Image 1 (cartoon, rainbow, N blue to C red):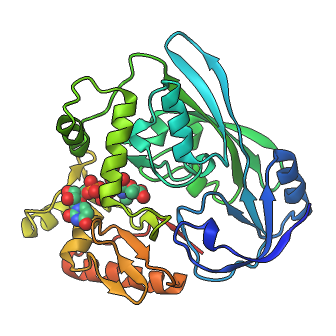
Image 2: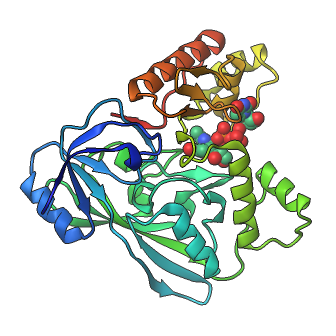
Image 3: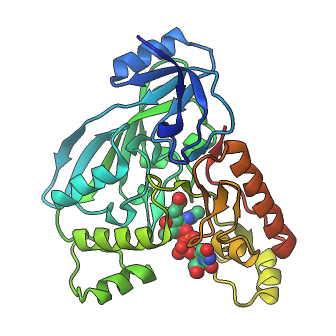
Length: 337
Ligand code: EPU
């Protein structure tokens, strides 16, 4: 299969970082993918999906396999639900719009998240009270070493907050080629409890929202807070919201009673990293072309020509400042290369 050499990856990562790929393959069929995996057996590879959750800090020497598999297919259905399959290279948001057009519900709260279908399960993407796992049925993946195809059920994916088996035991071992979602055809379970969604619906005087109304509300909220990667390079939330144990939380809450938090379980509490970063004074700060977004401190941005190393240096500065002020460790959600 024909490779391209020394191409810029700027348009393949939503941060818009200009690093070069020595060898680049655009993969449009699973057969080609398997062929290449065989050819490069036991060699290091760089698997690229939508490039929306990565920070590239250097040129990429291993061959880059850009997963560009396309296709959406209805697999099976009952009166109430449908299993719909999307290939890994389908754009996440366009896939949701397709489902909404057909009145298939479940994914609408995750509208406008950048990236592709195939990489969404790896970190169990989520937004506005819904996570991918809530609609996930199964996925098909190819083992990088053996080229065997394997189906993973929801349980086998071991989904957690921005986490799955593909980030842990099976890290670097599989390439997801398609995902099956179980969506509702009627009696959609609308999730409007996330404050801002209800407010957006109230503002438009929508009392009985459709899934399209919810999607539109989510799009409006995201557009008001989160930068559009087409206009300002970014990778969504750069950090995860830290989850701390009850003892750490009590000490923290005593000192900072005004801090927002979510109770995860009886013994665990999640603190919004965006709040911590804002309080540490970094919201809207800019160092050359690397910055902290002015509307959402959890998002680091590239004003044009920042290098991955500059963004990373800023991230470490933010992390240190948050630790110094709050004694809480925040860690990146994006993958660093
Ligand atoms: N906050 C601040 N300052 C900020 C940002 C947030 O004080 O600059 C406070 C807010 O006022 C609020 C709390 O932090 O009290 C939470 O903020 P928000 O609702 O904006 O959500 P988040 O926790 O910052 C998470 C996800 C987002 C997702 C939103 C909505 C993570 C790491 N991030 O952000 O996901 O869109 O909730 O569900 O869990 C992503 O993963 O790339 C992403 C954008």
